[in-house]
Amino acid sequence: RDIERDLAKALANDQLEVWFQPILGDGGRRLTDLEALIRWRHPRHGWIPPTDLVAVASLSGLAELLFRYILRDVCTMMQMLRAMNLGYLRVAMNMSPREMSQLPVDDLIISRLRKLGLPASMLEIEITEDTAKDIRAVQSKLVALTREGVRIAIDDFGVGYSSMSSLRQLRVSRIKIDRSFVHGIAESADDRKVVQSMLNLGKSLDIEVVAEGVETETDLRVLRRLGCATMQGYHFAKPMPQHEALEWATRSS
Ligand code: G
Ligand code: G
Ligand code: MN
Ligand code: NA
Image (cartoon, rainbow, N blue to C red; front, side, top):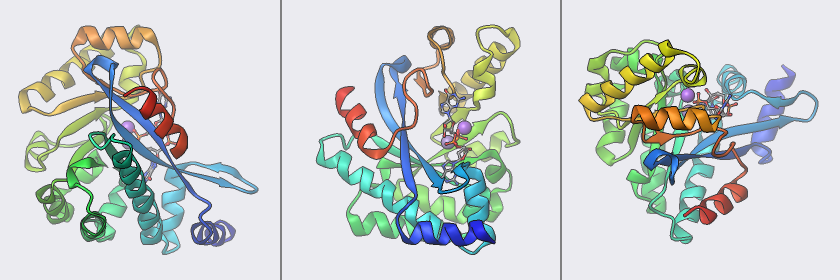
């Protein structure tokens, strides 16, 4: 279909962009990571939601091409950060369950990092609970990646299903609380309890917990009071094109 052909063209002509959103530690006071987020502005349909983009790519046999494209930009960002003495920052990359199960993501990532001489510990991959649910299908890839030193985060935590044992088995570095829980944190005692229990879970399993979707000063204050150290959201910064994200990182480091 049209959109598939346009995506193939956009990939070939470098028309997709990878943007980056800051993640902050120390109760939102210190930049620690930049999350890579794909952006495609279609000439007629406008901005295409990343999940649609990833779905179109896999339907049209472009999944690996798209993955390589994003990985290339992620690695370029890591190189630039290192060149600017910001090599202690990490870059996070999202991965759909389908990409995880269908593509040789472990080989693609490990060979690229080695070729460029980039430290694996500078990269974090964000998988969803759905991926973690059926770990047998992807376990060998995740083991290969963690053995190399790549970190794993569970994204959108709390909206899907993943077992406690998968969190341990996968040696997850982080869980990212889905923003639907963070959104109501000021008004809803229930949401606060859910967030608190995820923070407790993280503490007992020694897994860092990230609150996503921090949009207001109030969200920030409540999260700090609950003991949440790591945060991300529009309150700090929206996703930005690469050069803006680099400027942001320089200013705040
Ligand atoms: O960036 P935005 O809020 O529009 O992202 C919407 C969804 O698309 C999120 O769930 C995000 O994880 C996903 N997404 C964004 N960029 C990528 C990417 O590069 N690869 C994959 N697989 N998913 C992405
Ligand atoms: O599923 P995932 O967590 O990867 O989704 C990331 C997306 O969430 C980003 O692409 C970004 O557009 C969006 N996002 C990031 N921070 C906020 C926020 O504070 N509020 C809202 N509504 N969306 C956010
Ligand atoms: Mn994410
Ligand atoms: Na998320």
